[in-house]
Length: 331
Image (cartoon, rainbow, N blue to C red; front, side):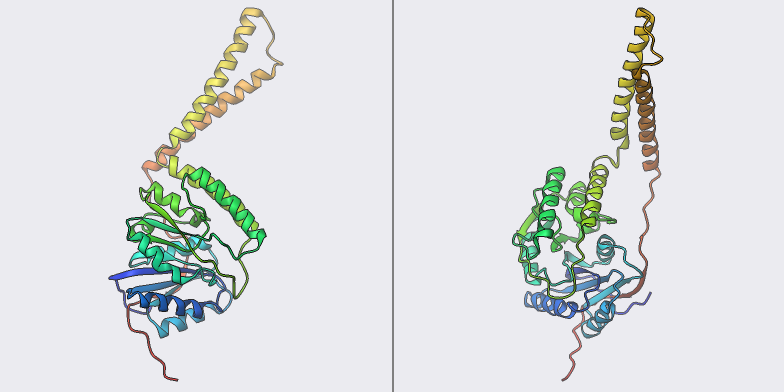
């Protein structure tokens, strides 16, 4: 793993940018971020995370880093997904605040100061809301449905969980570990960790200028499955017996009562039970109840021996951002 640059801890802001085949947009994105943050007088670093791009994205990131060391990069060996990219960037962030933005220029860097101002009001997390989206209807409708369901299940009143433009206090991103499609549910994960001061800001959404969208219906299917996982993990990860034990006990009691009833029916009234579906159903309910109860016990034992999980991604190269004046090229 190659590294260049000087580590700098005293920073106001870290901007994390997941990148996948966006070589055309990166120079302009870097210019806009630099202009906006320098105008505000912020000490900042930018971490581009190349999530296995097949175009010239990493070459462009290296060029940007050579011109301005405040822009650094992480390169994955292959595509691991946006959650892994954000997780890698969060783990290397040095700023007091951490902002995420997409690399396709649809998020406007000019909105970053407004997100920071909201954080300074005391919020832990501020999410952008693309109230007016510059996307086709085929993308807007599934996204609206997804946000409605997520809002109802999570209890967090955000309109746009999918917005890539978000701002966090650094301690928030340090408390969450992302994988799969969990980047959509960072607000829920943060709330579970006790960071429940969450706000929302309407942000400008711009049409895509370069490349092609990475949107696909499979993302929403995976997203809903991950939502179920998040809800389970946030509510029952530390107490699996409460989940499995409750349903296991309920299934066992129902099965036992059914078995008791057909036994009484056989002994008292002399009715045959060998060909009755209720006999099979009661046996299944008892077995399922015991299995779920046992699963809860195993889960409790696993939690007692839990160890931190290592990174799931391989970094092949890294450019450390540093707060050094950019190189001015003549001509």
